[in-house]
Image (cartoon, rainbow, N blue to C red):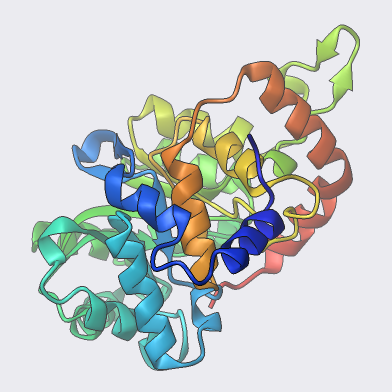
Length: 326
């Protein structure tokens, strides 16, 4: 049975006097499913803890650390952060405090936002210091935007060239690139370069599917989306795919249940859904949902997409074209 976030929170409040919530009880007895992260060979939990702007909504340090600790205790093994999440690497520093003593059980990903290749090594070293580790598992070139941005990344002596060197130097095991701006530009990047992983915006509202004669229109007739344009390239090249913007900054949770939104994304060929969870209840709820995930039938995905994209795609495309998750 599908439940809304509001229903879940109401149920949690009613049972608040119990020592252990239903979601925690499930988490203690059932492991969170894992998937292969493409050609990296690593297995990661299908639900990842996003430590961007949503995580930074925990303004009190104690609450922020408690939230991340809770995520790890409930079985999340993939942590997603970045060098520009918060002032003075606040997100990375918080992550570093929590993962002490558990580093070997986690897949740790951060991102490099700077485009100056000469600064790359120094900035990554600062990330490692903030995270209190000697290497990370994955570094994404953060937030690819335009063709000009891609050209700057690819330039001789640029960020991509330096990232390859950092991988050779074992500062990171894998390299990737993230985008929520332009699927065509991300497609170009993925076709040109053999990244280990990629991170892209994937939700039912941004696909652009719409009803046509006899059912859904074929993929090639759909407006560009990460799902129809960039994702097939990543899958063909066996890159590990991380999905972001599943709830579109919660813009979609009043139009579809968190279950349907999460299940839609997890029914795609992705390794994990990276979700920002600004309340402890969200962590419990999303873990509970991920534990009972079952792939949606194609017809159900088409129905969700057709309903959500008609109302939301244009405005979400515009919003994420300038969105900075910092």
